[in-house]
Length: 166
Image (cartoon, rainbow, N blue to C red; front, side, top):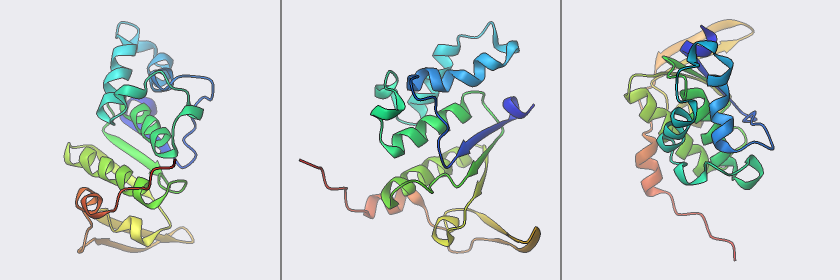
């Protein structure tokens, strides 16, 4: 059930280093013996296209930016078509703009009916969610809707583009 119903995204990406983006995304399907009749490569391609990495399928993690690596990890979480994605500090290793790009993707997934549970210690990241459940010492100390929720796509439109290195 864990692999079929829940997709996982981690701060450290957890990608296999000498393996292409396509093969990294395909991996959860290969572990599930019930998928033997599926075209796992095609499903992995579709997941990478969904996160905007159709042109990076053959690249290894070392050839990708941090944001691209995180999108590969998100594609890997989505390839099994889960009902829920658990994301543990998914923006922790990313710069501000890339973080908002990843949050925009999570908001799109949520709009498509996928439950996204995002763990963060950053208040500004939590403002992109619909609801905040705050824990301290194993106890819920706050559970409330986010009234001034940020829309990542809107914020991206107002961010200045990253400078291009020469």
